[in-house]
Length: 112
Image (cartoon, rainbow, N blue to C red; front, top):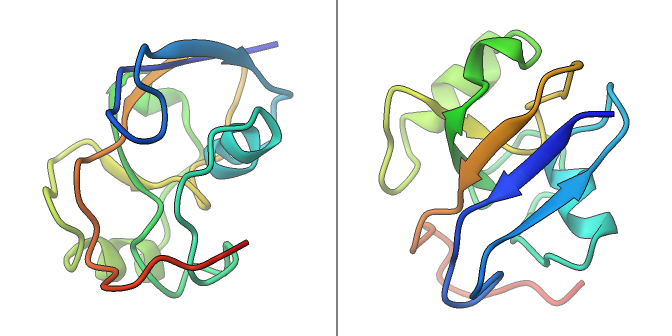
């Protein structure tokens, strides 16, 4: 089972942590299932960028990015070459390390 290492984020995961998830699970689903309440304003339908993460290790092991995700990422705050929408980044067998950016383009947080 792959491990997701989450680097410290002041709001969502102040000390950082590591969680396990089943292959085939999106990073967003894994975070939410483990109490890390990352924003996901579109309910994981690949229609916004609020669940944007930067994959620091294991980027190549994730499921392939489609054109819709690529187009949306252009709008994400803090975009980097190894950015993904966590709702679309599907885990394989390898461990990954992610960083949740400090900001999103969301002006109002959704209550889930």
